[in-house]
Image (cartoon, rainbow, N blue to C red; front, side):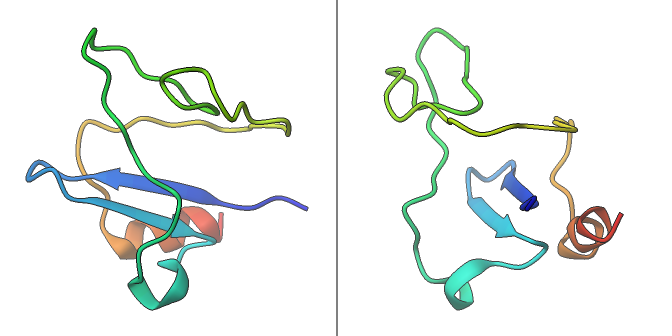
Amino acid sequence: KWTHFCGVLAADGKATIFLNGRIPNGGAPTDLYFSTVSNGSFMIGARSDSAFRWAGSLDDIRIYSRALSPVEILELDNY
């Protein structure tokens, strides 16, 4: 079973997580988060200290130069 996961980091620094096109738990905080690394790099599928490595499959990873709207994220989930 595939799960659509989308994280949006807006210009104001606000991070929003979407699972299957929707914000989980009615927008309540979750244990999913973004973190920045001082050397400018980032990781997909693990924390910046390499802990909690993802053990599943990843497909169709995209990075945009702008924050997607909730409507665009829902369209991607339905793609």
